[in-house]
Length: 78
Image (tube, rainbow, N blue to C red):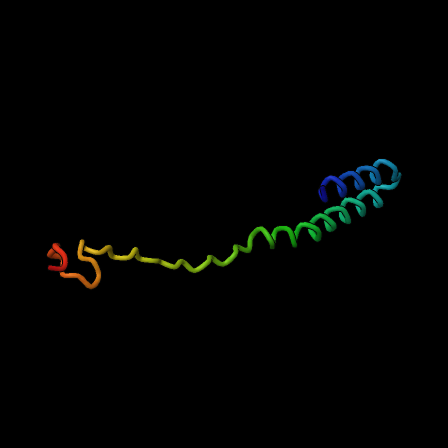
């Protein structure tokens, strides 16, 4: 959008100016405006966001068939 506006304005000015010096000044001003407008855009694109720290979570160890508080021998109260 920025490029289209600057190029359009420069083309309009170049077509309506009669002197070569004026046309050259418009071209230089248009290039300067493009560079000035695109510097912040390029800076945003080049800066990479810092990666989020990865947290490794180990899975819980499953019970080996022994109920908590039991002997694992089965049976019941006698």
